[in-house]
Image (cartoon, rainbow, N blue to C red):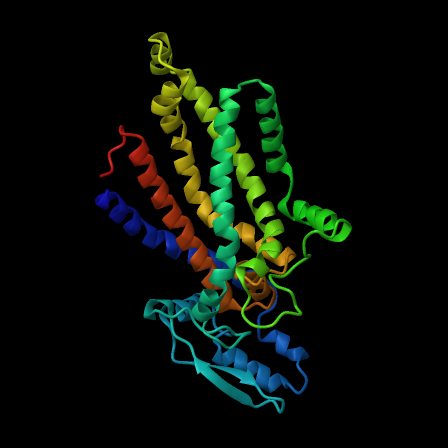
Length: 341
């Protein structure tokens, strides 16, 4: 197992490198840059804007800018005062020096901004993750047990709806029904604007219901299809029919033979879903004004904040790779035919 994880980590290095190169080129291909927005700032001058673009390295070729982000450079990040003079506000170092850089918009370290938003995102993604794998696995197994029955038909309809319904449309629909029409749940945010002090879990729970529901719905639908199809395939295997012919109870057959083998595809589903949770949170947090990583990434993209955008790309890529390694290990533990070496 240790050799497997070590090999995956070694292969992850060039993968991360390739992801960052592609992401950096896509970011640079977007029209405009963060400095061009200073043209709308009162008191800014063309000379000051060009000086900031030069000192940030934005006037350099894409390869040079990427090397600045990767290995660092001894230039200083500045802002422009009202009179057009440069205002020094900090230094920027490279990723290989252990620094993701400084946000051009917020004038704060990128890593500090991301870490600050992680708890809010985890408050949505962790409950959604538990709900997806708890309900999705249970409904999928029960659907296979009641094959072609009423429960199976309802579960199949639910899985199709969860796959085809866009999450943003479902979010808006739930807001209209439960917040606007019925008034049962708050619209957006994570706390009452009239309250003061530290927000408590009890105060936050009503604000978490709709985002977690939307974030979980599509994952539950996909997992139902995976588990149901896998369980039905296992039920048709020779060793299951042999167990049935021996007169073993259905409870024993399902507990010893069906469930473990049917859950193998779930192990492969876990990996992509860990990174997918972050991408799904981008839409959900924006719609519900949830102050997490997803909403911050959208704000960074709109502001052309290159260091902050690249920081989120790196975090997302690491989550995907870690998730795939976890999937490989779990699949090997569930299937004894696979050697974890």
